[in-house]
Amino acid sequence: MNRKIFGGLGATVASLAVSTTAFAQDAVPTVDKGDTAWMMTSTVLVFLMILPGLALFYGGLTRSKNMLSTMTQIGAAAALAMLIWVMYGYSMAFGEGGNAFVAGFGKAFLAGVTPDSVSGTIPEYVFVCFQMTFAAITVALVLGSTVERIKFSAVMVFAVVWLTIVYFPIAHMVWAPTGYFFGLGALDYAGGTVVHINAGVSALVAAIILGKRKGFPAEPMPPHSLTLTMVGTGLLWVGWFGFNAGSALSANGAASLAMINTFVATASAGLFWMLAERLAGHKGSALGFCSGVVAGLVAVTPAAGNSGPFGAIVLGGVASLICFFAVSKLKPMLGYDDALDAFGVHGIGGIVGAIGTGIVYAPSLGGPGKADFAMGSQLVIQIEAVLATVVIATIGTVIAIFIAKAITGLRVTPEVEADGLDIGEHGERAYN
Figure 1 (tube, rainbow, N blue to C red):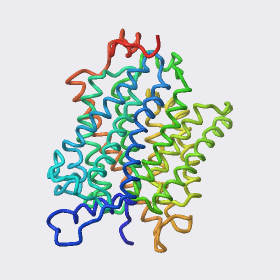
Figure 2: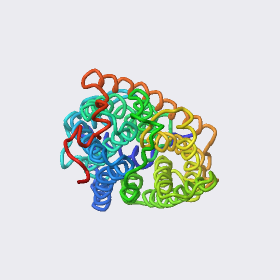
Figure 3: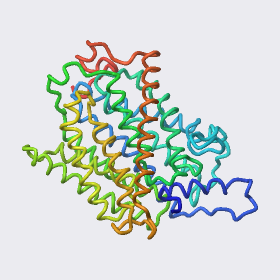
Figure 4: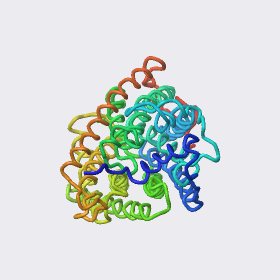
């Protein structure tokens, strides 16, 4: 069957090739003001997911003595990602030349990008900014597994190396027209592989290498403020509309499909997590609702424009139940200390979403696939993309962590860990 399309993203990236001076004799691409306004809004919404959304979500889940360190790590890693992105990350992911695994450095330091250059129907600078926020939040997500014991300096070194050898190449492989997974026809509308599997698997590897927090699991380590976590959850959900609907790269019907799917898949997942808690003999909790919401957002990311609304509802519910099992059963059974369940929610949810997209894409299930859609073949492609992402993320994270260890060391001292990283690493407290 014909090659699938990565939502609006791949098509728009492909248009970069025809907007260069080499094809100046062709019709000049026209900037659409409506599309541009929507994409600028979407970019700001994705940034809202990081600061303050993810910072509050993760920060509320930590102990009070580590609140500021968690938020600072997220903000600083995201800021560093933005600088690296404009220096060479954009070129490695979406630049000219290179191969199926990474692009060349022709657009390093945004060479050739001007206020007049166009990506599809939007200014190229807007596309650069939109994709920059994806890189920023992905590296921040990884930190959910390592909080409360990793050095701030180690976070910064890790971020540089990890983005360079893991995120930028995978973004190219999935979303660039010359990318390996793009050529296979894998479906990933807004980042199930690039963002969530990538971040979740990397989080697990980093947590295992870093080791457990002092006292884990014998010592209770409850969230210090579920109120802040709930606020962060709401900001994540709102920002995710920019993440998913914005990946259409246009204000059109595809964006509207991604929008409704982001509503209903998430709603389903939040409720199903609470149901799972009740079936497990517990009360439905605020933390459970927040966890389910994020699991649903993760799962619908690759399917946002690749599913009908009712397929999204089922996908969100199924992903929520599987993530609940991973967090409540698998983690205790294996004994790793993924502090804020970055792997259990993002890694597992991303895998379920990426594979499930190959099912809900079917027109017989309400998806936007064509009549000749072959589900079996598509599932093979989706699984191949998932497995390859897992391998790349694992190897790249091991390299990045050990480079950080060699340069700065990984863990704070036992005294700093006991007193809290807010005081030990930053000399201040969240609460006085």
